Each structure stands twice: as structure tokens, then as C-alpha cells.
Image (cartoon, rainbow, N blue to C red):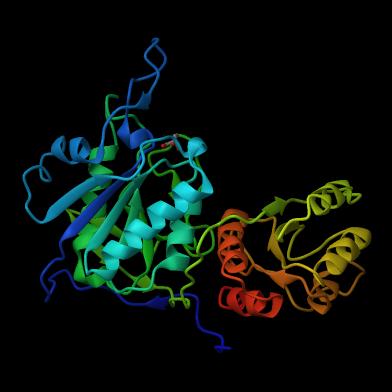
Length: 346
Ligand code: GLU
């Protein structure tokens, strides 16, 4: 087990790079960035552009011989299957293993999940950068071209080497493990509630001011496992927990109130389940982690940490689900899953 590492360390990148930029592979994976139709007037947005067309439409990218583009899938987030997501992540990782910077254009609705899984798989130095758009390619003020241009600059940049997977959106750079879609329609739809952005892109130049430690990678053969996210709320009587457990999941990501608190009966249900399957707990607030001993009432974090329930650390429920899926699909034991999540529970 590794010791505690700081979540972020400061590393401001100089504005003049000493190394040459990387070649970049752009992988199209659908989403609004690849859609046309402005909506509202009978021409609602649907998938329209492949990755080559996306690049060709952007002054500053078209005709560049250090770029190559390929469409992996062209669907909205809500149509992606877990095997699509694994295929996208593998393509990105394999290109990064060959030393290329990688940009994945993706629907914003489920970008968090694919970017997180990609970070779990990613085992090379070259950066992988996810981006997308809020406005379809045909809309006035479409944001896709600027986002793609920024993402390419980050993927090509020597300063982004060793950063793992990043999300570039609205001029901000987020780490995949921290990024969340926090606004349905804003041009800065992503934020990192726990940490803030790790950098930004200005005048086509990425500035990175902090880094996250990399985690040991996993390489699941598939994602054919059932991992459910089960939230909790005031007055929880365990109905949802029992229903979830009746589906015989391979793992569960559970919501806790505040910093790791549950109704005592619900805590007991999950404590019993945690003897058989990995049960990972996130905090309902967007920021903060499961405490260790501030409260001592029944169902407090003190009880939680005495059970086999595994704190998700700073990960969102979406991110924790993808990591747990990768863990169980890789055949990790409950103790190995605990070790894997310990890296995010600083
Ligand atoms: N706003 C979303 C997008 O950016 C909707 C569609 C999707 O996620 O695929 O791409």
C-alpha cells in the first residue's frame, strides 16, 4: 500500500516549452460536438459529423500533418454501452502507448464516466484529453471548434505528459478523476468541485498549475459486471438498498449523507453486504470526504469505518462506479478494491 500523497501538487508549466509538441490522434466518440441541427425550430440536433469532418471544419486544424482523426462511435452519451466505453478507452490508451497525444471528442452527458475509466486504464506518459461541446456544430456560437482546438494544444503539449486523463472545456483544464458536469447548458459545463481546475488554455497555450498523483492502472478484459449506484436520503428505510441487493450486484456504490452518515439500519444492511461484495461509499455533498471520528452516533462515519465499507475518497458517484467496475471486472478481491480506492481517500 502506498502512503498518503497530497491530492494536488503545484507545478506551473513555463510558457516556453523546451520539447517538441507531440503528434495528436483525435478519436471521435459522438456527442453534441458532432451533431448538427440547432433545435427549437424543427431541426433538432442529431449525430452528423465524423472525426475527419470535425477537424476539417476548424481553421487552425485543417491541413495540419501532425494530426490524424478517426471515428470510434458517433452516438449521444445516452446510447453508449459499457462495451463502447471500454472500446473508446482502449483506443485512446493504445495510441498514448505509441507516444501520441490523444483527444477524445465525446458527449458531455456521460463524458465523466468514459474519462474516469480511461484514467483507470491509462498507463503511458502521453496525455489523453476529453472534450465536447454544449452547442451543436451548426448552432450560432458553436463551442466545439474552440474546445477541440484547446484540447489539441493540451494533447500536443510536453507539459501535459504524465498527467493521466484530462478534460478540456470552456478554456479550463480539469483532471478526469475530479471533473463533473455541473451545468446542463453552460459553456463551462464542467467543474472540479473538490479541487478546482488543474490549469487553463489561453492564446492556444496550456498552463498547468497542479498535478494529481497517478494511480496504478487496471486492464479489465470487459465490463460485464453489475455495479449499481444507490443513493440515500432523509428517512431512508433501506427499501432501495434491499432492492439493489436482490439484483445480486458484483459491487455497489452507496450514497451517504454528509461526511459518511446513514440511518443505523441502512448502515447495517450495507455492512453485511460489504462482507460479500465491495461496497464503496461516497458523500452526498459535492465536496469533502468520509470523516474518521468527528461523530460517534449510531450510523456515523465512525461506524462506517468499522465496517468493511470502502470510502470513495474524493471521487463522485459516477467516477467511483467506473473505478469499481474496472476493479471487479479485473478480478480484484474486496481487500484489493479497498487498496485501489485508498489512493483516492487522502
Ligand atoms: N449536451 C450533451 C452533449 O454534449 C448531450 C448529448 C450527449 O451527451 O451525447 O454532448
